[in-house]
Length: 383
Image (cartoon, rainbow, N blue to C red; front, side, top):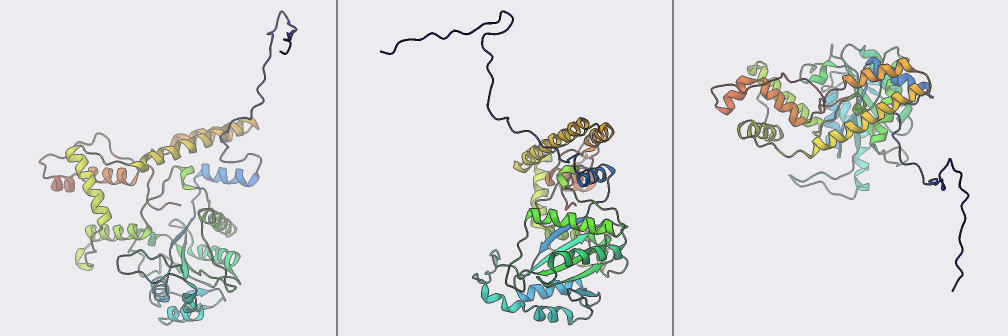
């Protein structure tokens, strides 16, 4: 049996006998949203605090067969009314531009490379894209010619000599369909990019790709003398809609038909998505049955993470003596709108339109609204 040994610990009468030190790794800390040591990051922070207009770079879809690609080009050039600018520096105009581009890009030759067949009616189309449809936009009032110049620079930097592309400027002053949608009031460029390069490499667009593109487009605009910023929407308290852009456009057409002169346009097909949400709101107002909303919890979690990042930014600024900017950050945090989902925004809109809601519910009295709704995390497509 091993002999027992006694360890003697020297004791200071004014100190603890054992001074235990943890050698464990430090737990994860919240990183600042902006880096005070980076001039570029600080410039972006100041633009954000000043409310500089944000760029929009959005993938709106893409053709999975030559016919769909041709139809989209026909749509953006208004069937030959607007000029199409190509990657070869040409300006094309006319009804034959769309079929000529599809043939020139040899989109029909990509089809044998795909393994999937065209879907049956009602099935989801899982075929690979032949082209990507991209929109680059700025808010109303931005000079359209500078938006176009920035878009041309952006396309050259990302796709020249690799992916064929063409673009069309939609200037609110000259676009024949500028009043059809809300986005028609903003100067924007429709960019169509061939999904497969001339060497056979496919273009994959991911979330990080879009944010990088936004930064490039914003930089190109600033070089044109246009104030532009590119920060994630969540940082500014804005949300993104779960609905696709086509759904938003269809809902906008329904609203235009409802509020405008109906004799001037045909009634659009009803939106089943919107009808379902309206029925949920009515069910809650009339019966107190609130629908389950897992998305609301996700929005709240995102907001908490954003707030933690802003507070970390404030602390980092104060550590390097930038107290004035830190105070601006504190004021900016106070202006962040409340978190609201698509359902919340629709409910507020319906409650403010008391006449229509009363008509639907068949009530004699309008529902009481204690507070007029404020526009918070507007979950329509945001920059």
